[in-house]
Length: 136
Image 1: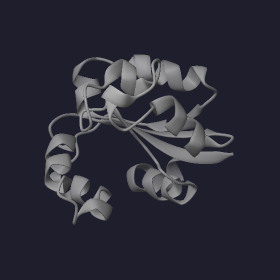
Image 2: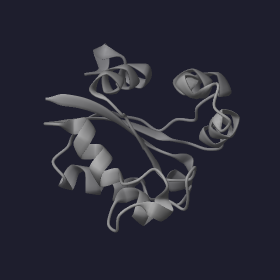
Image 3: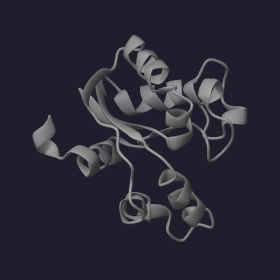
Image 4: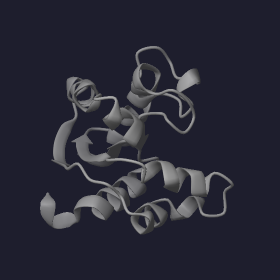
């Protein structure tokens, strides 16, 4: 089994899409291993997105991710990273395939309703960031 992280972002939480997104994920064969609702601090968001620190969108991303509650979700299934990225759709919601999470619930590039790990290694790192190994 492979582990990956889904984050339901503040825009989707505010719009009450948490249940809809979790249903899509579980209907696609994922097992929810851990979840919580929380509000990131600026420090936490900065550390989580540190890989983007030199990018021009970094500060806006941190500001957006601290603008409301998020729902991080540790997921497991075969080929979890690739499978989740497929059902999330393109990062820019306006370009995401019909029926994908970002197409259904996102409104643009930044407010795209969700984050998904981009590699198996990052899936492990990102789930540990929110849950640690002892929560599994």
